[in-house]
Image 1 (cartoon, rainbow, N blue to C red):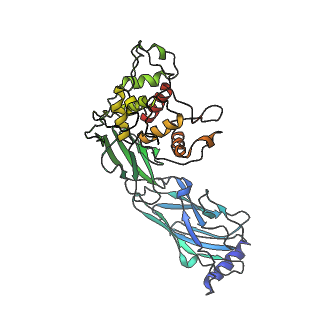
Image 2 (spheres, one colour; image 1 turned 135 degrees about the vertical axis):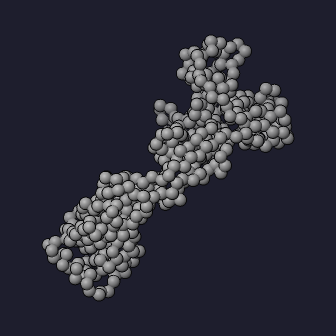
Length: 445
């Protein structure tokens, strides 16, 4: 049977026939990127011959490929279609060529790793030396043909495989080497489909894969490489520093952000007796040591008290390491109810767009803060990129539209979680301890 198929294919290739044009653009290509296989000296990797659709009327085919035999050795080639019959298989590593044919009888192709490319054949290679220049595994167009049921060739677009050394990553964000808390770092390579890996420790191999952006909270140096087909680019180094942040004022003047000093967490101060056995003790102490939280005159912290809007203003502004403005020009109808110690913080939070008033013109400084409100405050303050992913809480329908994206973002980033009964309770008021815990997560301390 194999001999018959090979003879038929050779005859087809040698004859001048009418080419059948298929309704869709039939693309045939070679790919290795979806296999997550490394291409390093002495190891094997697989290349997939694929079509861009599974409904082409392919009944038999033959292809020939050319490769650089100083870099690659071809070990095997075989059909990836069930119930197919292999025909011609000629592997010539001395010339750097391979020819293969098979009869698949119109069988449906199988998808390759859910990337909308459909496997026809698999080619196994071994690397002979380090890849130090771009290489191409290419089709021989004159000896590559795909036939329909009538034995007539289908019109195909052949796409060679470019194995390239990726270009070193560049920094897309921030645009300068300085940033404010909440900015994001993003790196990319000009090489298409290259993956980005990074580390923040000098001398370590970059092994953390970048899947989105990296939120910046402190001075950091990134060591970044791009990888494609297991081939690594030259390393790029990006040193980023926290800068002073000017805050626009409604009443004139400026405040600034300066980097918070690194501190360790000592033993709990004995005067804070009411948090000694509290579940949030460590998080509260972290903020106390950074000067973001202070106790009451009686030496307590009152971790289970509900936090108010004027208190959250102070806590958020302090967490951002912003000095509260001395110029207060609040226009809320109840501005007189805001405590003197809180006015500068409220004004600064309003200037930064973190807090605002209500439709009736009030600020309601003594009102407790709900979980949905805290989600918005935290996501805005620390500049998280908002997402709109579907929430799976039993009570997700009770989360108002204005808060849904903020809650979704906070949940996705692990800043706020739901309860054991599967609810989120968006209207439940948060305590001082819960607020401290959320801020510690945002600050990553």
